[in-house]
Structures are given as structure tokens and as C-alpha cells.
Length: 388
Image (cartoon, rainbow, N blue to C red; front, side, top):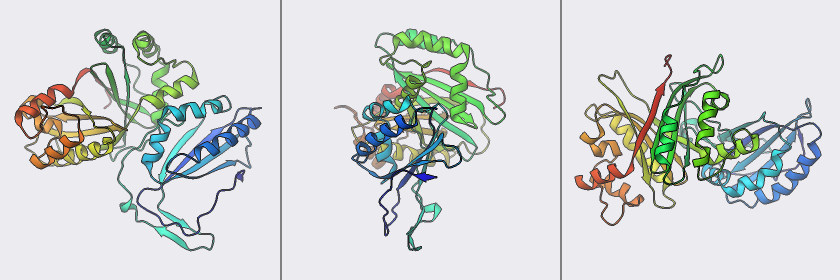
């Protein structure tokens, strides 16, 4: 690689529990390299002022001049994700889209070890000490890159809102589509799609084996899916144009709802299993804390044979938190378990992180039942491939 901008080397940087390295692999269109360099030169000074940003490099392949690499370092994943999901970021990178082909990859890594120029290790962390965060997904420059769970399945969600008053029409459209072909290629397959609505918010949770980006592109190109997306476009609160690569990248960036924790179903399941989704009214700035607490409760529930929660996935971006759970009984039978509410102390902690209103109290059975009714998302459709 030929380095085009020299970073400032930190000779004695101490590693903490959350430093993040972001790697963006790009292919620059023929004839657009100088324009790309001009855009990058303007952008890099603006990015340097973003909270949490440490440094970045721009590199060009010595074997193929069309192939470029941008790496950046961040103090923690949350700083990067807050920026990459922001409207300011989308506006900032728009000039770059006209220079870059659709062939790109965005990868994120925790920094585990670092060696200084003198050859000494400036800090190490054992792999098990890496901050648990589970699959991270983002929108830079639009297609999420995530890590599969222990079962080899990638879980991701997209969320968007529709115009108030159009909910019934949208639900009918989304429930009536023909399922696309599950097999994408030799290594990628759609395993399950669950679609929910709460008020005017739509959440589509997908489970994929293989390459999530390839699966999303595959789905977007299917005629039956394109027809559904075109049908709901007039009802969206924010316009989108999936046929336009730049607009599609922006949509996936805005709509991405990463899976931050997954609790697998353990053992043999007997009887009927019900899938349910809940959206939590998070107080400003508490999204990550709510997601962490719900993930801990799901882990405890899955290990308790008396608990109806068999497993679940917590999706979170900023203060949008959605929890999808598989239940062995109707949620109404044990509403506290369905909500992820633990004992009285844990209920008080969760309640302090949420906007429950003046009468909300998760420490009482009446308060739990009321809250469940308020945050329960209606199931629109839940489809699994025959091979799952």
C-alpha cells in the first residue's frame, strides 16, 4: 500500500477496553481518482473534529491503482456508530459517492495489541477481555457488516416509519408479498424474516447464513419485493429510492438496527413457540444501558426452565431499542418475563432508564401489564425458509 497521508504515531498508547479500528475497502471509478483525492482532503479535516476520532489513513494498492483503503481509529465503538448513523455523516460523504463503485467493504475491529516503532508492545488484552458487544452493524457507506453468532446465523434489523394514518394499509401490503427465493448463492441463504409494527414504526428482523450484504441485495432485486417496496413508498415519512445506489446506501444507513446481543434457544423445545417483539421507550441517552440490561435478563431467563423466554435478540441503535423473543407460552401469562423485567430491584433500574409516564411502575403487576400492552409490537408476518 502507498500511504498518502501520514498519521501521527502514538509511541506509548495504552490500550483500553474499547478502541476500534474501522477498515473501508473501496474501488474508485476510472477517471475519478483525482476527484476522490480532492474530496477526501476536504473531508479528513472535518472528520478529525468528530468526538471519539483518533486518526485515519488513506492508502492505494501498489498492484491495482483502482483499489483504495481508508482506515480510522476511534476511542470506542459508540463514538463511531453515533457519527456514522448521523445525518451529518450522510451529508458529509455524499460527494464521495460519485467517485466510488458499489464494490466496497466496511469492517470493524477491536484493537487487541499494538507494537510501537521501537518494537515494544504498548499494550495487550486477552481476547476474552474484549468488550462484549456482539455483532455490530452500521451504514458506512450503507451496507451493514456484522459477525455471525455461534450458530453461524447473522441477525440484523431495519426500521423505518410510515405516515400516521397509513398503518393499516402498510401492514396489509407487507403481509401479502410472495417470499423471495431463500438461496442467494452457494454460501448465503435467507433463513427467516420477521416483520413487526408498533404505531407507525416498522421493524424487519432478518436471519441470514452467509453474507448479509449479498442477502439484502438479493432481496432488493426480486420482482415481488420491488413491487412491495414501491407500493409502500408513498406512505413513508422519509423518501427513499432503492433503485438509486447512492439513495439505497443512505436508506440502509438510516434504517440499520444492529443486533447487539443474541441469547440462543438452549436444548429441545416442546410445544408451540411464539415470536414477539417489543419496542422500549428509552429516555434520551440510555439506549445502550437498556440493551445491556435486557440482554442480561434474556440470558438468565433462557437458563431457567420455568421461564417462558426461550431465547431472544436485542437490537439497538442510539435510543431505539427493540427486543425480539421466542416464548414457549403466551406473553400474557407471564408479562414480566416477556418484557425482560427481573426482580423488584432490576425492575426499578429498568424503569429509571425508560420513559414510563407519570403512572408507570414496573415493580407492580398492573404496571407491567400496562407497559406490555403499550410496547408490544404487532406481528405482521414471520416467514422461515423450508431449509431452516
